[in-house]
Image (cartoon, rainbow, N blue to C red; front, side, top):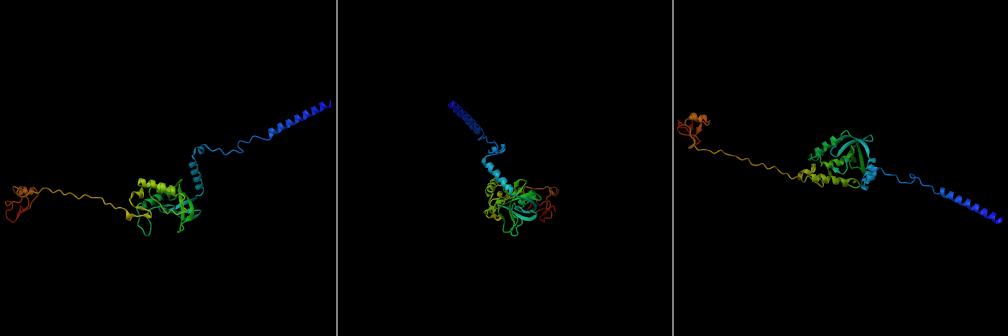
Length: 272
């Protein structure tokens, strides 16, 4: 009897233990939430971008975050403007580009300088713009050094695209966009746009109108055609009436049509 009770107690204890283990197993490892640990799901447009495009997009967003809003007050020339930014008037100089001179105290107006200035005025004057600075903010004249954005486009690049500026004043550390600028310039050179349409005009150290090959148009010499002259022996007038009708009177001795019979007084002038 005692053996049966002991066996029954052991069986019941085993059943309770198994039940407890089963309960612990079902609650100790819950299924993780699909949204609690997973990475954000990219949008359809982001998923289709190449790594290069995603990098450029990130760079663009970063650059845009570093821009300051400003208003163009006036345009000095193609690469220099006056702006109002943060309530203060400033003169800005475009980074990494150089346009031909129009207002230099010691230089004459250079080819395509007026075109660059006119393009800047048309594109910028009175506009709300954004300025982006590089590492060094000012030049030795106290001007802000900027990449200028207008209507979502960089004006520095626009000048290069139209052949109205060259890549210049490349001084580290302000070289953020120098590589794409040179690519744009190369395309304008190949197309012969603006300043690149004049041979030898653009040099490494600037613009040189004095080194331009001056080719004068060749003007052919006028060809003179001379009517054949006739001697007095083969031009004869019956009388002075005929000579006057021909419009050749008076006829001097030695001229076509002169004859002694028309020179009655013998003074060497016929039909006087």
